[in-house]
Image (tube, rainbow, N blue to C red):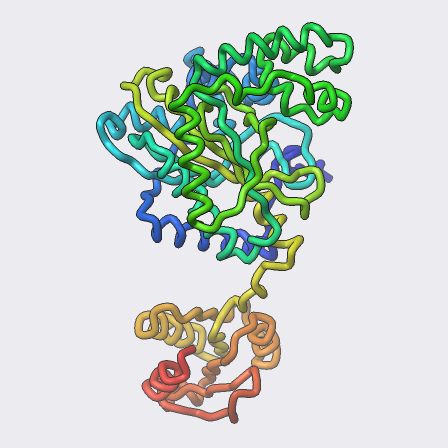
Length: 425
């Protein structure tokens, strides 16, 4: 017996019983994007490796340890995308979408990172992302946060997520702070864990995000980034807070919030929850005004966010916010006898033509009417339409109500269609 092949570790199937929760979340996301006037962009899942090295930063965990990178037959180094922003910027530059223009775009699809699989985090995961280009002020930062707040409300999870907010300042302000932070950490090197010692020189702001309690205690006396802000940065951050307050959106200021990628500046934010244990971040983003120029385009202000779909669906399931699974069909067509199969298919197609949106399942695989009606009941359909040799000869259909809505009756086909219209099935 041949050895059974299984899915790659960390790359999971989404079974038919699980897809309704995904479809529910995806529908809310699409409707919200339409409500705000954002346009969808669809991007390749593979890019040249240099794109992510330049965009994300070569000393980040993503580039150093987590990317799926390989050489193709031409010897080019390619990478399965670990995040969506870099590819969106690349597409915008390549197709002339960004310079001196305002663009508000969203995307959704699979991303890939080689990390330890755990609940809500996988090696192939799905991400929903939004990117806005060409707008400088704190007003667009506020709109993106308002948009996410509307998503939580539509999904029924508003009371279970909290907004955390910070500013990383301008690049030159962050560079000055970086020097002060490194100097402080060097004085306390013996109290740092191995990971923080490594990051101290390569990406010191990530030390602020350490989950080690001893490191966090040490950071209580560390230099504070906001002390290095200039007037323009302070005005931007104050303007954002004022707009969120006016919109009735509560937030917590978190000076330790830095995000994991190198390209962020000014505003950074995360929506976090206590309902998923350690995996508490549901959505995160911020400004990346230098990335377009860094990747070869003209200087363009930009801001965006992303959320992991697996984690969002897990939150909906944990909080029991997933709508009941719908029936597979509204109407089930059962047919038996000579010529009945063809007549059943013809009936089903006519129903689909004249009643758009009606979900019609045709019985396949033979069997008597008893067996077919069991299948009809299992499908969740409200009505079974039965075609036997007698019905076919008379041009009629037997209507059987499977959920107690009425008595069984035999009607002409036109009457059946009219009745389905009236019932709104």
